Image (cartoon, rainbow, N blue to C red; front, side, top):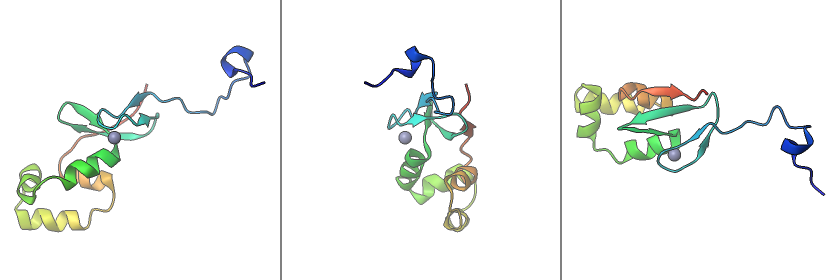
Length: 97
Ligand SMILES: [Zn+2]
């Protein structure tokens, strides 16, 4: 029979406990993970990539404050979600308690 660690008191101290979840897909987010401010939501990096993919170049340029050509160029070399967020002036937040 499986023991319930909460009851038996042995526990698993290293097991991460989800602190919050993504406002869009509901994925559990753990301490130290980075989420992104999207309108009034906090979304995970997967959702951010999805949202950014749905933007037109004109919309992206509006977010960077640069020309469309420059925006396109900057995003072409942005491989991580964090880099994309920085270019688009999206605030990233580390999940903490
Ligand atoms: Zn998500």
